[in-house]
Length: 114
Image (cartoon, rainbow, N blue to C red; front, side, top):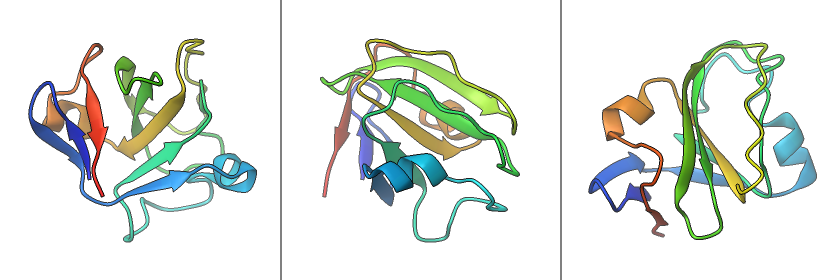
């Protein structure tokens, strides 16, 4: 589970790590929606993402090595590039609406629980 410890909310109950080059490269490209097996894709290392060849909008969290949210991007449409966050260690791709529903904002502290 990916938990927002600051707001005491669940961001994702089935996050998947995308640490390999191919996992980061492909991400959610060519899919119609998030796969049924996960509700978040954690890309590491990652400081920015693109949504080229994606067919649906996503929410994005850019997070530093201490698991603090640096920035949030909501409803990132297909064919876009996120801002580059030099202080980010990883990015979390989420279904659209997750940032608002989980009340997540910059400065919040996250925790990944097995």
